[in-house]
Image 1 (cartoon, helix red, strand yellow):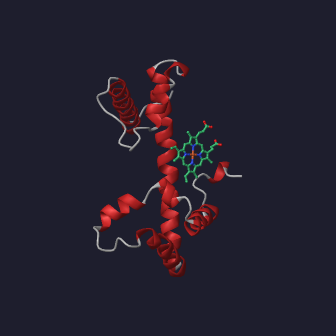
Image 2 (cartoon, rainbow, N blue to C red):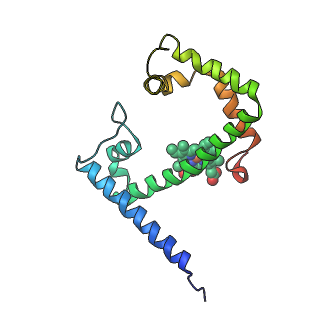
Image 3 (cartoon, protein in one colour):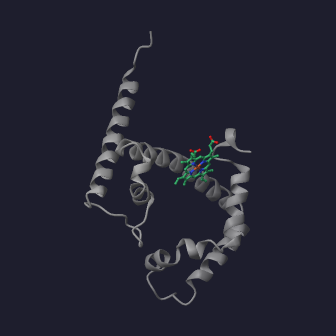
Length: 151
Ligand code: HEM
């Protein structure tokens, strides 16, 4: 017989807590009590809710959000750590990357940096940055966040 340890109980309790939190968030979104912080007010949740009939019930949307959250967070943070590790080891690459990124900020040197960063760091601006793309791909090649399923 498997004996539950204290950490198993805690894990179980935390999973329930996360589920309740997400469920409440979904209900509030449905009732218009919160909204997406993106400019166009479109995020995963608003897309899921606009196709609500394809999910069995709200629990299905909660499942999907939790899956996305888990799938996205560990992979992305591992990828970012790997990028930073390699940039620290290779200052020439880091400087080339900074040069490419700095071009986005040209002409706005006298503005507050956090505001400029917020304005320029958009998907439309970032997508054409070929050096950044190469750095990310090369880092993922060195250290895949999910090596067992990588082809
Ligand atoms: C560097 C970042 C990421 C890497 C390396 C990565 C890698 C992967 C891999 C290899 C799989 C396939 C797993 C398998 O075959 O069993 C997968 C699945 C998945 N990923 Fe990612 N992922 C990343 C970021 C994200 C993000 C940001 C999201 C969501 C916003 C996400 C959502 C998902 C989901 C939902 C699945 C399952 C798809 C299915 O149902 O088959 N991932 N990911």
